[in-house]
Length: 135
Image 1 (tube, helix red, strand yellow):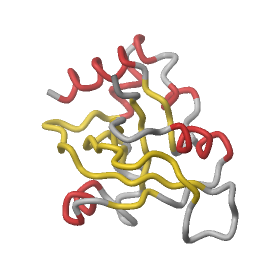
Image 2 (image 1 turned 60 degrees about the horizontal axis):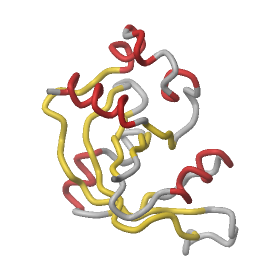
Image 3 (image 1 turned 90 degrees about the vertical axis):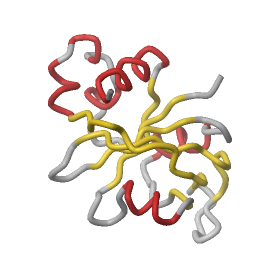
């Protein structure tokens, strides 16, 4: 069974549509120690929700981790890590942060509690609930 994650990106820099167009990418640019810990924990086959930050503030798609966390080959810092991602599916209906915050079942969701973190774990129950909201 895969682990579930949420990855944040500023859509003007790199959007889910960019991932679909490219077909795969190296997910890099993460510097926060806790976010890096989560990134290094990812394994091939895990699934990640792609969340657009900025003006959008919504989950827009699902990606598959093709290669789990490994040292960033572009960085001189061995603490920095990356993963390889491929697009899986654009959500039929984006799930906004406002919708998530209104729902009591997401009160302990890392997206609500740790708003500034760019890589977050998602529980299996939360994953299921989020996909139901996107249907």
